[in-house]
Length: 383
Ligand code: SF4
Image (tube, rainbow, N blue to C red; front, side):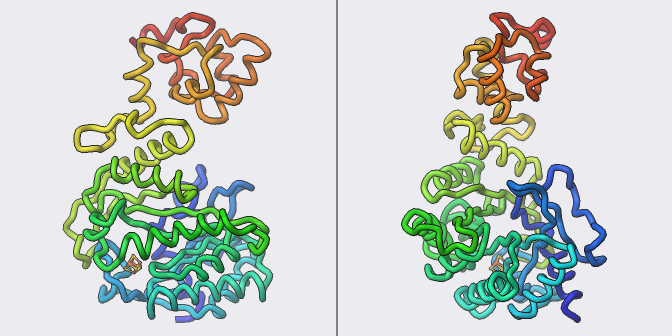
């Protein structure tokens, strides 16, 4: 296979990896003019706007045997491998042609985690220093990578990730018995935060330390949502994790978990909603509407469930509620709260149209608010 054919193959094999913010307008990867046919490049939302992101592996060969993974050793499928120089030059030419603006680069483990990490680092180093690539790089940290390799990755990348896969040691043993949760996976995440806290970011390629994220295979080890969110909250608070990604378990043929039932993708969505409530909206774990075994109800948005239980009889006055309380009202997000705080300094908010003008989903908020001391007339019918 020539180099572009290998890259097409690898980019297809990576489409399930939820590693970046998907553009809201992109439900599926969109082909665009400069992109060679067959190469999967996906729109991804970054703080500065949308970019075309190539998600790929340096190699889909892997010596490990994680139970859920399509790349596990011994599984029969077509694999492809790049050397760092070859890959860096190919990706750079694609970026020059406008086919891709950023890259998420991962790898199967070949020759141990340390050697594989070196290959990823060499690739990013060639891109940054020999080819002067200034675009977005997300680098995966391999299980078993060393601390100086984590530092090097942080100097080259805009984002680094270490996939925990499961929320704790016991659950990981059911997914990937040869991965070591604390030493191989959690420790590198701790190193990222240690480096951020102890070293000025002057040696980072752009003068800023990268963000760090992780991913869980939701439902793969029969863990509860409570376990996943407990670990996520701990990571947010203790190792500065920017975000946890949840990938609903899907059985892969010819793996030990091929007969395990797929997990409803809605569970993934509820986990994201709950993790944002914990990270950005001031919720505590105890406030989330877990059912007996520690799972979120699938039919209901967790914020709506909380509001139905806590605000239905005691709606909040929009004109006086604190920032903390406003964040708990369905239909009002982070930007909406700031808009309300600013608008009510000028004048009272008296009706739903005033909320709508602030970009708030007024119908969702209506059952839980008072406007100038009154419930909104149409909302009464909802009760
Ligand atoms: S180490 Fe990574 S690529 Fe290899 S089998 Fe495990 S999850 Fe898959």
